Length: 210
Figure 1: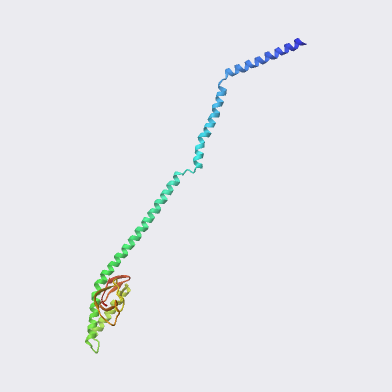
Figure 2: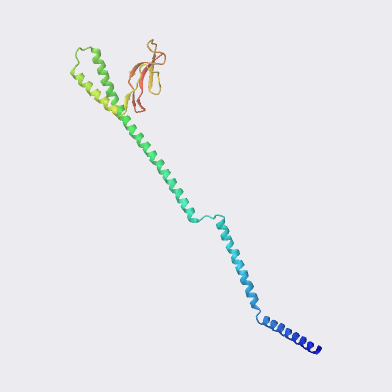
């Protein structure tokens, strides 16, 4: 019995040695199998590492060039619209000033004619005629028509007599002592002044009470 066990043990040892030798021979014949698998894993890890920055950029809120271009164009449009609006306002103001200046020039040329009408009326009243001359009546009609048309354009006489002296609308050429008006009041109107809307066309020439 002891010999049989010994033989069986020897057979097992021989079988094990044969398997080890076969495994070693197989490893020598295919040495690249293990090496090829390792780079594949490394490659996958490399791709994962390379992909990480892109995800991190998106996560960090990187701007899209298209969005930046759209924002730039919108900013340009807003600026150009503002510039155009300022240009339009400036042009409208210049037009208004030119029109107003043109009106002033025409009105200034007409004012001496109005002064002559009023002087003629004062002279006729001073003559003390009992009946009005038909010629004077015709002049009065023309005068009233002229003043009505000027009023439609925004022309109006400046109030002077009895008002406080205002250098913005009055031109003081003399001072007088008078009991009728208080100090600083306009006591006499030597030449009538006129306004065009809120602008002075001609200052009133006045005398101021002391």
